[in-house]
Length: 503
Image (spheres, rainbow, N blue to C red):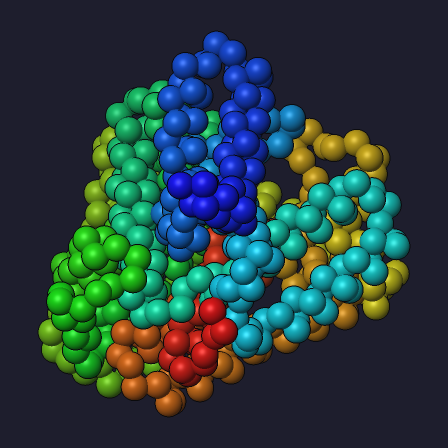
């Protein structure tokens, strides 16, 4: 008995679990201190939260699944503390990263020997640190840098924990399940606002309610419609690839031992083989994206449709697929028209079309051209290392250390912003990262024989290209679902190319 007790005490993973539980308890204590009136809610939530933390520490992959499910929950489920917005996906990501690093340091397990993104990420990080020399608001630049390093680290972690096809299937299934939940909520949000429900019940911000255009702009569980549209490009890309793939994906034999939990795997595997479920998620995602009225989202959707048409050109000649795709398009368009006319205001359609197709005038267009000009001026001033990561806002603000009422200004073009803030060196590092991802995906497309893994690589890559297109209309680099997608692509590529890990 004493020997077993000694082994338990000396077990490094047990010490890691105890430490993480202590940290979680401290976090709950701080929340109770800030929000003492809701102490009971936080205590009950803490019990569930600590249970999930223990599950993550026992099996790090559960943390990846939790992050995947809560990716789109940017506003709903978040809370303010010490002037910062903390999102549940960030909390689970941080816990998973700490557990992953802790286990690696103690046991030297779960760290892949091959990850092509490490080089461009390392180079970009180095350039970003050097750019701090020119930062006028060093505190702001350091905060932005920390957030960027955090999401980049997550993209490195995912390929180390998603090392089997079974885990990849579970991850894709959870992403699509989460997409189904938030798209249903998005429709509730639209209809609820149209029938007069208060924004406290719909979750819409005041500027996106029907008071502005006569109809609401769906933002789902995100803080803004453009971010919601950006997330929706992920399930749209994945679903398109899954439905256009001509070869049949055979599920694994039920008698085979599945890593990560039999019941969860079999349930998700059944969902991924259910074409009705895939079509439902695809249709709802497209409809919600249309209702966001995000022109950048429309641009990303257009890029996805073009790339899917090129990759799956032969599949488009299938009469069955043509009929289904046409039916989804008709349902999406007719549903949009019906929802816009829900309150018997026919002019809503004209307003919607005018906003969706206006690219030359308007307040938002004028603001974008203004920030583009500001960015070019900063680029001319320091083209090599820029004005400091996260430094565009402070540089163009009236006071570099006073946060404007509407927040720090952004360029609304990620590539221009990177060039302005980290110089041409930082932009080239980012372009190198993009080039590596796309080049490996092309290699998978040409060589991989595994139907499911190849489909995931193609679907996630065309979704990534859609996001890159939308990045020409907004500019925040540390969005967690984008770097999660990057990690997912690399994990699927590694499986497709049969790269081994030392774990």
